[in-house]
Amino acid sequence: MTERGRLPEAKFARSLPFERILVTGADGFVGNYLMPRLNVCVAADAGVWLATRSPQLANEVYLALDDATAVHAAVERVRPDLIIHLAAQSSVGASSRTAGETWSINHAGSSSASGC
Image (cartoon, rainbow, N blue to C red; front, side, top):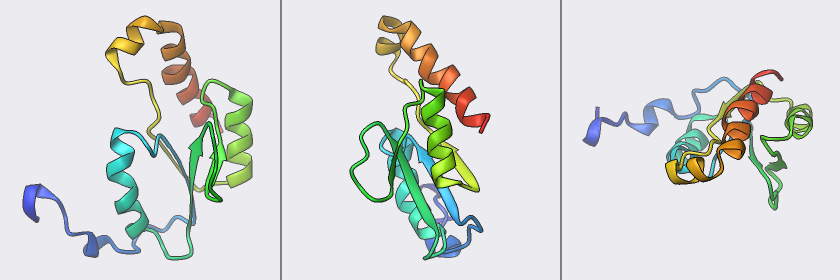
């Protein structure tokens, strides 16, 4: 173990066997820690796609978790062998103010993603 209990990244370099990875919530709290490490751990020729409501880059794909059709279309387009689902409404305040939207994103969105 290294400082703060982190494992050295070099130990895991290019060790993940997945070729096509779809990540939801890559720009969120956990995603900001995961993405730099994930990019080190996948093979150089592996594809990592980021699911977003406003795709702008070649490795981004449109996905709205509250739209099951969009979820299935994104999965069909990317055809991932691994989905890392991090997207969620995590703000307690926002969750209280918009309970229906929070339910739609956190529960129904997760259900859609897991059913692909």
